[in-house]
Image 1: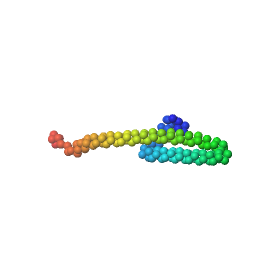
Image 2: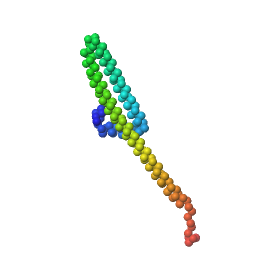
Image 3: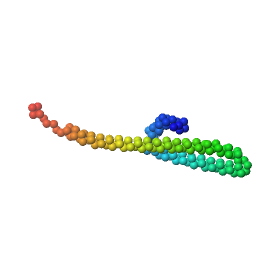
Image 4: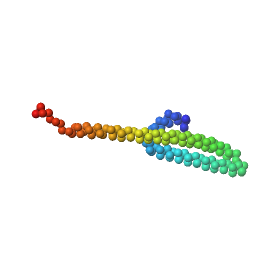
Length: 143
């Protein structure tokens, strides 16, 4: 995968660093914001392209359509590239969301294990405390 000339390993490092810096819960919000922005970018590109095509159609009716049609072709190419980039971003962010869900699952499991360990250790600690508090019997021979 080559997203903006960033390989898989580089994207993985970026994702791990962003999770560490932002945190898993905040990262989900960031991913949703990026997805929303990618959708808006695609919509704006479609609007821009349709406006240029309308202008080209009107100019073509006036006899100058050849020049505008040549202008629309690069815009269409850019639009295609933006759609591809938006799709790649969406797929990458969906992967991040899945990884974040896995991180949350691991965190929950670790919390459960820690709680179980605490529950197992507390009775043992109480036993050792009560043994330490018991008065020791004096040996009758030492009197």
